[in-house]
Amino acid sequence: MAELKTRLQNDLTAAMKARETVTAGALRMALTAVTNEEVAGKQARELTDDEVVKVLTREAKKRKEAAEAFEGAGRAEKAELERQELAVLETYLPAQLDDAALTSIVDKAVEAVAAQLGETPGPKQMGQVMKAVNAEVAGRAEGGRVAAAVKSRLTS
View 1 (cartoon, one colour):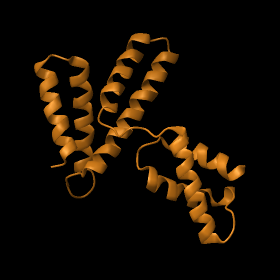
View 2 (tube, rainbow, N blue to C red; view 1 turned 90 degrees about the vertical axis):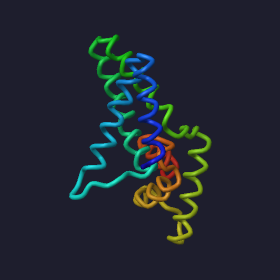
View 3 (cartoon, one colour; view 1 turned 180 degrees about the vertical axis):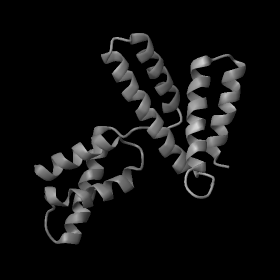
View 4 (tube, rainbow, N blue to C red; view 1 turned 60 degrees about the vertical axis):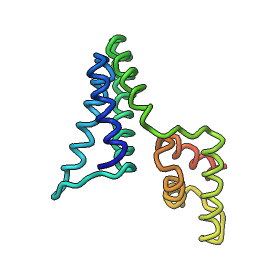
């Protein structure tokens, strides 16, 4: 079993014993999402730690979007609950890259694509650059941030 999934299960047990309802609820939802991912498809399988991180990232994004939606609808208490669950999930995710590190990775990817093409890539080669950047970033930055950084680099 994936080490991260085991850690999630152990932390859920501890949160239930300590009667931490928000933590227990967030971990329950995360473990359910992991289990659903494991049984999705034609054959059940065990997820690797990287795949569990992808599922947790997806769940964290859902919490963030839900908090924004509740805030926009004037339901501050529900928005706060979503933010608390997001904070719980973020403890299991890798640290996010800062802007300087992301820019450095984008610059390296642009140089690599330029070497392949023999010319400086433009906006039409954004897909190639994104592929190289996403391989390097691997869940440490949101896709929107990555796309914005690549787009600004290619259009400048």
